[in-house]
Image 1 (cartoon, helix red, strand yellow):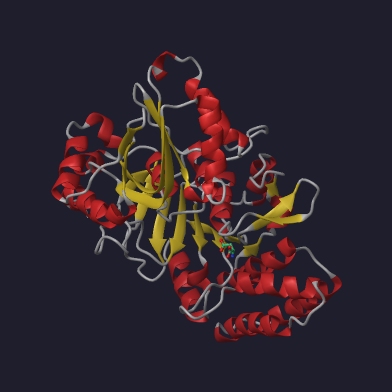
Image 2 (cartoon, helix red, strand yellow):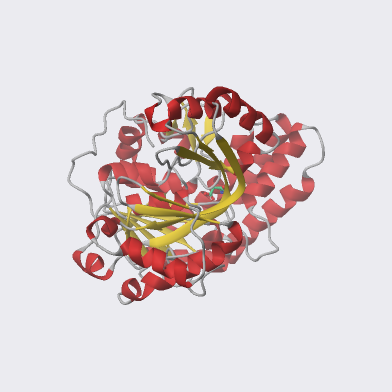
Length: 460
Ligand code: ASP
């Protein structure tokens, strides 16, 4: 979410025909990968604003540059030797520079950084150098202007982008004829100190650049061909989603589907800039488009956007006769959770019982305390604690308008022999949530996916 207390000159302005492209760590992990990035950028002249991550892993055994930078910083700050991770960083950047046959410029930057680390810098500054150096190399390769994020992106005390950014960065990126490279992941705080977003934050930087430049599209280039309708570790080769709405994505990612950084959607969603998730290794694949409203074709072929879930919940259910007559009952019950600093996720109820579902980790080591307090405060007839419950969200904008979705979900679960422990349908009718025993989770996800996929898959 962004802070909305500033002017936003781009809001309502005519959208430019520029595309912002953010490239993730695996797209920039080696010279070979960066050549693909160059080809992608050159393939469409609207791709004018490029936002790189730091080089990521080249293979499963590799280490991300950002992780090495944090290691260097930690070692330097406790006065121990950081030459090993530093050498790895140094070798990676100089190797990329040489393989791309770029003029040798990165050496002095690395030397300066070595001195800075020895003298003492913040962890944020150290971590930002991955994107910074990556940006320098990419700007040279693409013959683009290098834009320093610390001069134009303001990050508020809450870690979210400050509204001042729109005018500042918008002006810097104003020349629509030029190509710009602006490193991801960092900016500065309101006092002018360099500051990073949270991990994975280059996604946020890409969204910020798209909004500031009033781009027509935010392309997020990664190493998968879009988002999948279900977790591929559970469902065999789930279908990619062609088009999905911002709200559907929010529901799916809340339920554990790994999509974009949590805060990356807000800047573009607020002004309706679509996002396209693409694969650097398969640039011909159209990927997944994230939009405000589904197109007519998508509506015709779609019943659900996807299925996601997590097995990490716990549930406390209390029963009390005539609970429905007691004013403030749920209020007091949730007060117990508040008292222990425990956020609740769902709170389904019936006439004489109510359940509170929380992430199980919050109850670790203090279940008895919480249960005792509930007993004392609420004087329930019964109290039941279920330490493990899996929640599955079936998400889709069209569900509210389509009869029979719930019937299909429950018929599929029944056919798979899965017992449903709870059902929750949000008032927005954007999702149906079912709770099942953790051991039933994979079978339940497969059954639900199987009940819908043919319709949606027909379009892919
Ligand atoms: N390089 C940073 C990280 O590893 C930011 C990013 O890649 O988005 O978290």
